[in-house]
Length: 136
Image (cartoon, rainbow, N blue to C red; front, side, top):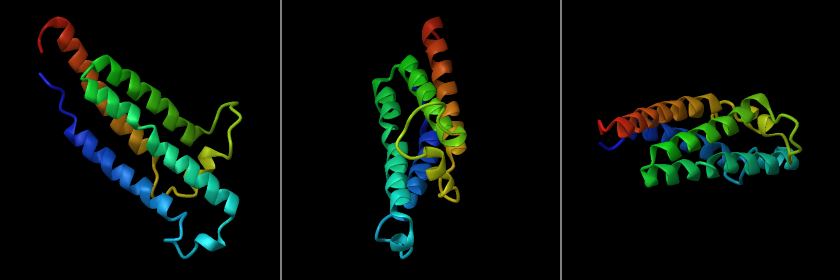
């Protein structure tokens, strides 16, 4: 049996579009762009785009069809997205990822991504369990 994560991926796509909108607000598309702090704009673009870029790990895991890889990807991404909520713990980073997200909190909600990743992880765990017991 193939794992169906259509609903979760559709929710994730909406989330990705919201983050992309936040990135656009840091570009010439926005009239406020030229009035914003240039350093904040640079860090926001960096962190917001990285927020999206790391999703390739989940995509590759889903493409593999390996439930254990999907679980591992979800765990890693959930930890990464928690950094945007809690802030970096002792890591020396360029800019402040949490501040970048907070400036765009009307669009970027890491907890929404974590919730979707939890649902995908749960489906992958069920699939792994069925594969191990031969119920798939």
